[in-house]
Image 1: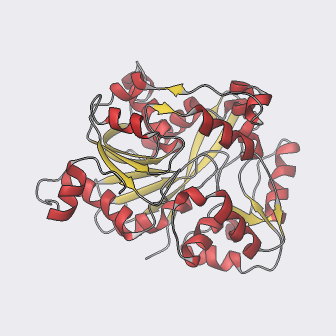
Image 2: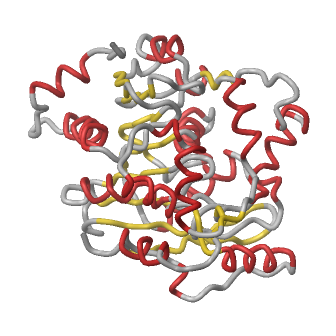
Length: 357
């Protein structure tokens, strides 16, 4: 697969300018566009294997949501919220002149889609975003408060690992809900979210000084090989996201709740979900503590009446790395085009909810 192209999207928050960087795969002139948006502490690199699979038929755009990956960090962390992220996607759609898109959203990436689709004035506030189909990966109309409390305990933590190997081992523990993976896949999942500690420190110092980080081109990986090469560096590594993305947890749920010392209420998003009018595929990890089974079942009966697919060996959230999960996404997208019928097996899988044995 050829290296990704990188778009730098000039965005605005109430605190000023910031850049959201977007990886692009496939033919840039292809009108069939898939937008893949990652989870809370993850990055666009999570979608490289899926993008490689889809790029022969689609133009695939994978944004690093602000504060993560290779995008800028906000000077005012109070703007790390879904409204800002949705506004940045509107800016991306406008600057890249996108038409209708297919949207694949893991966790936070799905919540951004719910914000874009369910806003009562969506056509006025987000006029350039047209979502023609939606894949929600382990996120839905009710977000479990217990899962939010669990996430609040680790988001913003900044451990330093003595080597990339140590970082990869930590990823296996922290992200065990992603499911069963090979060593190479775990290394990719780790490389997607860590950088040499010196790079991370430079970003922290730049923000403290009130200036945007200006790295050299080597700091912007474009391929899995670039990530592999970075992982071979013999130096300490850190998780490479703005630790201040934890600010909404402290503000919204209180410091005690974010630390796991107080109960966090469920987040109820049924009005947003019920407003969805496009074909929707819901993927759920069978062990997920964020998207509970009863919520997923109810989502098949109301709103867009999502098709449900459960990943037996995953919790929150399936990584979409393996052949089966990527195939379900690809076949769902193909099913929206009448000249590309589903094969019989996947047609049966997507036709009805799937439960673990």
